[in-house]
Length: 332
Image (tube, rainbow, N blue to C red):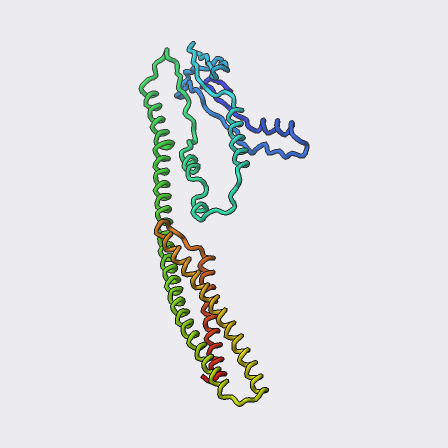
């Protein structure tokens, strides 16, 4: 504390605690004496004009319980104020907050909206509302009455402080809040457009899957018809062949080979059918749950569905080519 003819100041020198920590700590610990800025606050003002009249502070006493300060002025007046007189309390509070922030787990992956709204909007508003000057408590000599000129100067100064340190800052804060609200509204509209696009893409994928399922059913029916025709042709060919043991053996081997290929083709068709049924089940289940909650289709899941559909289409095309190849061999 520093008292003088114009009042009382409270001065906080924070780097002293840093030096004390460095002295009491390890040898290899670093020191940053200027990491916390010092500050001064005007507590009591006893001189409001440029005249020679003063009401000096003759002395002061610090109180512990309750915390406060008692001042003796030159006019004989005694002032008692409730103050936080120990600056270590404020420093410890800042340290506790920093340690708490360090102990909390940090999230590596932040959403795009969080990155857009950084730093904290509340902290930004607090920094905008923070005043550049302090407003001390006025305590003038009550034995002398200030003249109208002094009262006018004091009133003018108070109005100027009110305009520059309060009203102007509140206008800036209101403009900043309006800007932030508009930013959030634009972000909301963008997200709504993205959700609508995803809904359209999901509908297109569902329609494509339905068409592929119908196409698979048609191919399966055609495959069964072709298989029956092949069996019928094999029986007719067997009855018309001459009774030659070697020719019969070769024909039997050829029939066995065709039978194995047919079974392999049937298994492939069954696997493709199971895959289509599974996709149809998932789509129907998703349609049931989509009515209860909003679902955003991830990019990886969309990519997997497209790859599965392309794989099924490739398998179906391959099976059609195999069937045509068998028909050519059998002359159907």
